[in-house]
Length: 326
Image 1 (cartoon, rainbow, N blue to C red):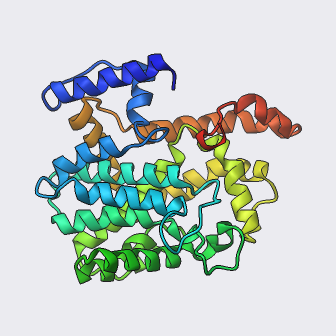
Image 2 (image 1 turned 30 degrees about the vertical axis):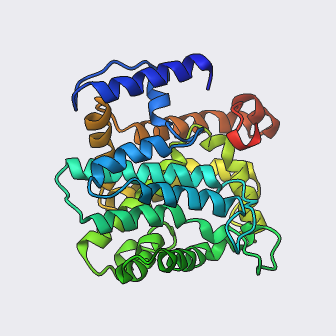
């Protein structure tokens, strides 16, 4: 982000703090993008705290701050028992993006009239932070790369989340309910088959599963990150695609035939609450996640045919440098 863009975003944030809720605001395309990405290239904690104060007014900021800092330490290998993350696609930036999307969805749902207990929202946020920790290596793992656990990372993530819940002394219901919530991020599992103990826990699972999809596919660097995803799958022994180009070739079909159904049917269109969030929180009556996903898919459909005979051309069309590779 340039200094000018940062200044404009800071100005937009100031407008958000000063103007009444739902006041219409005019945003340029750059400002819209910066509002959407707040915290994806930088630390999102300030925005997470702002949303948390609205969602959980009776909860001290220390809850979200500790969670956020502990996950940072886990990914950085500074928390006892963990090694520093060497994952390129499911990295800390991705986790932060999913947490932000999760909290935005909770806020949108609250504005739409869904009143969830504080403990359910807190559990959903915790699960968002831990949903991909199963791809991190512990000091006891013999593997050299976290990608080796891609196929079973949800189960490991659940175990790590439970250990953390015990560490914090949170209610036993957190331990019981984190499994079906995190399993909603597993595309091989149909949400309707999961043993949710209540409609509130089911809704929370839908929120996390939705946020995981939206945060990935709406990301500014999603297309540039697809080769990283292919390498993760290859390292994990997943042979669904022959090359990163092959993965890109199938992504649009995957979205229209699998993901749209998962969002609309299996997760009961919880994604629509994003538009409510941006309208009520920023005065932007748009579902920015779905807008940016569609832009990514349309651009991908445009460049793949042009690069079929010469994959090297992808470098001409995909020029953004992923933040972790700068």
